[in-house]
Length: 549
Image (cartoon, rainbow, N blue to C red):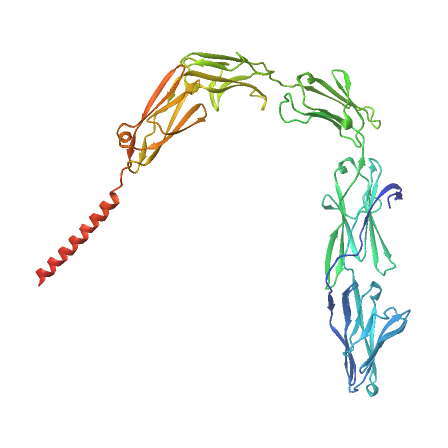
């Protein structure tokens, strides 16, 4: 019912909230107390009410007491004040009648219970069990069949409303009580003379169900722009069980004029070169008016009130302005300004710019400089170790340990992530230097032993072993490593093995001692001590026995 309607002298926009009966439940039947009609020896007992869900099977019992063996039991309904039989039974013979609303869906059992399958809403009526028992006469009794919906759905519909135009919400449901809520708070039921009220209506559908419609009328205000509305229905289920269901929540697309504009930078920290910058302009009205943008007075593009600068540069800094016009409020000042600052740091310059090769013991120096939009720092680092914080790296007497890569890092501490860096390498040349030798061990004379001789030096050193054996050479970082395997002779066990590393700048040598592995006699000693202790114990025990005798 999305349309304009006049109620109480006001024009309203309708928002519909419609509920239908469709809540799935298992087959449920509830029986109330038994009614008994008796006359002499004939009694007819039935349930006062039987409750059943739509589409399920209903059973209406009829308990007959009579001196007659084959009473005739007939079930009737009433149509326009006249009884109409729907089924009967006498003895083992029973049949449903043709031409009734229940034809093909009813039967009378041997215990005279009327069974109705695929119950419809139109089956909700009074059923009469009439018994004829010969000399005992004739009696009847009636049962009320109540039919309930299986389930319920409550859809909602809405559309936009102007700030000064009232709107209407409708909530439809069968056999129910409706209530409206705004932001989880219920509306009361004021009269039609107020700006917020509800109007109920009742319609019987062709299916036999009743639809109760409740329509909410209200005059919206700007405070309702973010409010949620929904209706709640209460409906009956078998067993006097009252259940509730909520409709979908709806919001009013409320139109209202703008009073002020906001232009803001969608960033939580300082802007730096390379960032993506988003500037958003919006008003407090609805819908949003079109926006115009300028940078330093020159027009720029900002679709849907958003200016986006990808991989921003320092040249993008400047004054950005946003302006809008709302024809529903021409007097409003809808403008905003952002002064954009883009922080930067220049590439790091290292002097001399290239890697350096120096002799062992010489001095080496590098200078590092940069510029930035804010206070910045310059550090020289090797790995994670900070070597200098003034831009100058100076090593007075170079050793082989000083060789490797050095990095100059420039940073702006007040702007996280704003850094620049450059790297250089120091290469040290000189005569070889052999690492302290690691001794070798063998189990016995004649076994093979493996020795490693590691040496710094540039140019790369050549290795000479005395005595010689099976040799292989590899590179490990800044060092050359020679690995030798040979038999441990008596001479080697006495004098060791000599490694010499040499290049054009000189040579270095080291002697690797080779020895026999020490045998661990501690276990044997402990075993021998235990044996002596045991024998001593036996001897003392023998002496004690002899003395006793």
